[in-house]
Length: 66
Image (cartoon, rainbow, N blue to C red; front, side):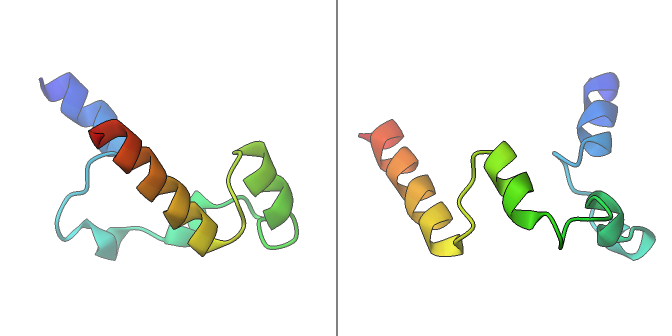
């Protein structure tokens, strides 16, 4: 169990309360993210629009719950 917890914390699947003060979110992004944002989103098969992303999530949830 502790090994799984360790892996999940490292991959940021689990959030530790109060840990934000010890990390820099800019470190999570590639240095050229702003210049190549569209490329990264395409590689991840994600829309650039937040509204489209949320609509897609809602559809997935409705199908999964349906």
